[in-house]
Image (cartoon, rainbow, N blue to C red):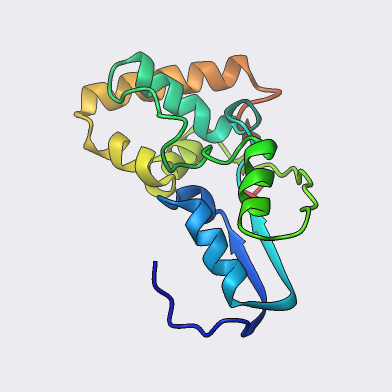
Length: 169
C-alpha cells in the first residue's frame, strides 16, 4: 500500500464503515498510523455482529438458505469482518495505536413499509443488492417473500417497518 501523504502530517482520520471492507485492514491501519502526527486521533466505525444488524443479515441468511450465495467467509472483507471488538482492538493495537476506546452506538433504520425495505435492499446494500438484482424475477419474489416473513416474525429485532408517514432515519 503506497500513500502520497507524508509521515506525521494529519491531526485526525475519520473512517466510517471502511476498514472492514479492506483486503488488509492491518496494513490500512498501519498506514493510517504512519500519516498521523503524534497525538493524532483515529475515529472509525464498523458494524457489530450479524445478529445486531438484521437489516443486512436477514437477507443474507435467506440468500444462503436458498443457495444463491455461499456462506460468508468470516476472514474475508465484508460488513461483519470486524464485528468482533476483540479483533478490532488487536488490529488497532497491532498498527501502533494506544489502547482504543470501543463503544457500541445503536441506531435503527425505519422503513415505511415492506416495499421501502425491499428498495433499500435492492438499491443500497452493496454486494447483496447486486445479488438480488441479478436474480431472475421468480427467485427475487421467493427471496422477498422469505425476507418479509422473517422480518415480520422478528419485528422487535428485525428491520423496523412502521405505518406510512414515518421516515427512514
